[in-house]
Amino acid sequence: MKIPHFNVLIEPRDVTPDVLAEPGLDGGETSFSRYVQARAAGDHRLVGLPAFVMRGFRHRCVLVRNDSPLRSLEQLDGARVGLTGWPDSGNIWTRALLRAAGVDLTGIRWHVGPLASGEPGKDRLGSRPLPENVLALAEGTSLVDELAAGRLDAVLSPFMPPELFTRTSRFRHLLDDHRAAERAYWTDTGFVPGIHLVALKREIVEIHPELPAALLAGLEESKRLWLERRRLLADTTPWLLHDLTESALLFGDDWMPYGAEANAAMTRAFCRELHAQGVWPDPIDPGLVFPEPALTAVPTP
Image (tube, rainbow, N blue to C red; front, side, top):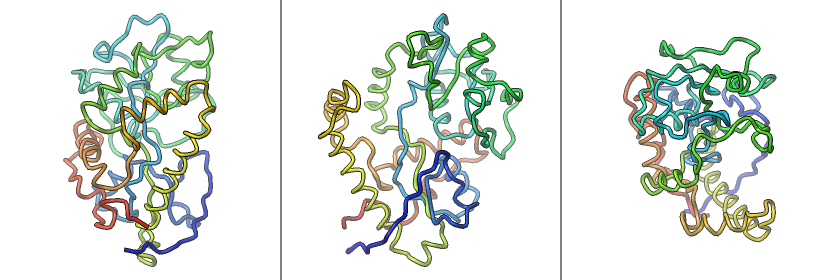
């Protein structure tokens, strides 16, 4: 099948856009969690592409104070834990690690708020009723401040506070060797968790039905070129070449494959977690997420 040519204008954003709320956008980066929940609710206004432009292991996303006695996920049972958003995709994956470690999520006292003071506002709580053990931080407070003061035992965050990259940081990763835990996770599951995907408005897809497949193919080509450039210019960090080599040996040429079939196991696991964690009230059929046959695999231009 010949893929038609489309001209696509990319607009960089500091914050993930609400695609449906902006008339000037035909599509954009979208939360995996919010997209799946919309599909489960029968809202098909967005056509999600199985192209996860934001992925990452979550073992590294649990922070504690330097003087904390905590060193394992199991030790968070019954703890006071802050997180940057209750329905957020990344935090759902991180809570899944706790569940897998035998931690009772209902026994944790969750506190939801910004990682640091002054962060731009966003929907951190979602639109559905929250469990009784999930509370919002008081206005003007932050997870970093609460953790430093000892009012939280740990924080879940997809992004690291700037001071973590200093020699005087008050914080550290919960796991002393999160990379080893992440390698084991890959061996067990076969995927790196997806956080954000690209979605198109259904109205534009109805006008240009070939667009989803064409855009998916273009994103695949862009990813390939990015990897080629990184391998050629492996000097953006002192040890990037080592990381690229090690990653290729472990994952093969593509640790973030596109296409519905390549992401089927991850999609099933995510749908299961949304229900198991009480984010969504009913079991979710994974077949609802990427039903378009043309997106099963990445089309060849």
